[in-house]
Length: 31
Image 1: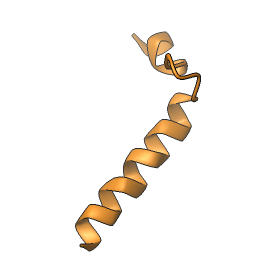
Image 2 (image 1 turned 45 degrees about the horizontal axis):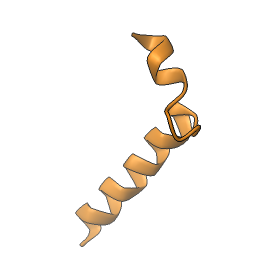
Image 3 (image 1 turned 180 degrees about the horizontal axis):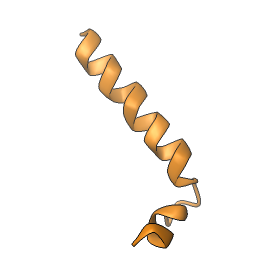
């Protein structure tokens, strides 16, 4: 399961994707 998260179809690392999701989540919460 972890390996599937290592790389996404778009080629963006899972870590980066998680950071993007956090930033988006924080932005939504800020609004």
